[in-house]
Amino acid sequence: MTFVHVGFIGESNDYFLFQSYFKGRCRIYVVNLITKKVQWISLVPSDEGEYEILKFRSNTLIAKYSNYNTPSRVYVVHFDTTRAGLQYKYQLIEQAPIADVALRHLLHSIEQKVCTLENGAEGYLYYIPSFLAEKGKLRCVVLIHGGPFSSSPRDAFILFRNLFLIQGYALFVLNYSGSIGYGQNFLNELLGHIGQKDVDDCGNLVIKMLSEYSSIIDSERVGVEGGSHGGFLSAWLIGHDRFKKMFKAGSLWNPVLNMSYMMVSTDIPDLVIGCTKNEPLGTDLLFTSEDNTLFFERSPFRVVANVTCPTLLTIGSKDFRVPPLAATGYYHALRSRGIKTKLLLYPDAGHALSACEHYTDANLNIVAWFNEHL
Image (cartoon, rainbow, N blue to C red):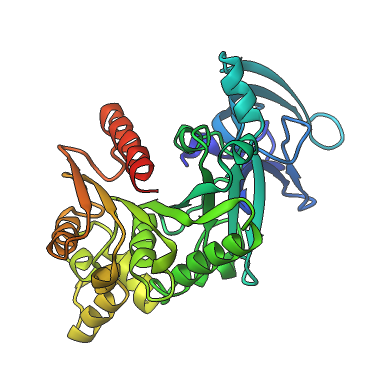
């Protein structure tokens, strides 16, 4: 966030506005610095939804709202601090309605279930009930966020997700140890434990989901997809001794695959040190052979020989966050064992594959990959 996303309301320093995640939901809050009271700014009569500050100045806020079945809406909010307490009024100024009636009906019928582990890790299951009657049990794609210190939105309207849902897929979206919005202790759990606690959370959430919703999900048609650290976790799951048999296809988007290579090639080597050793990065950037062994032991490249499912890699050639050569090595390791794999290399693309043509092509190819292999 930049300075336009936070700030004091009005001319006093009594009220401070900001946005923050809470258990998968990004919300907008105002804290009264005198009374210490925190107030949630709600723009709809529901506790569901994803909020985002677009612009804020003085007494006026421009905010975006969406839900998993409702496209983005933009509101203007006017705050009044002259009365007792904080008052606000809001007005809808822009929305993007779904013109197609059949599509609108499908999206509005999406159902959501929640799976939670004892440590607080969560997974959100989405599906459209009418497909159960038509198809029987549904094939499912597990989606894992990157970061790792980030979060999968629980309620946001995301085209990539809906592209799966309207074809009759179920989606299982995960927030694991290290995800934001679950408290500082949950966030810190990942430090020193990358490739362990996060992997176990993801695998155990899928096991629990398949057990609790066995009447909905076809356990023989489950795939996994993730980008960056989500790709790291996806690669771990498809090669993991305990979890690999659950997955019939994988998709890795600019994934972290070999932290030994990452340490000498990425623009964020401090993340490797912090997440493997729970230590700060020294100014000399030096590490030992024991460190190097640890980096590799925590990397999914260590279990590439266990992978048996078809695996897609979508890679940016100019990714400085997760340089692409590790993905090339992973691809050749799979091919050498006769595992079906495909590598899509996007020229001059960075970590996010953010150019419209790259992003769209990658998304469509990922959906096509699962259509073929699930």
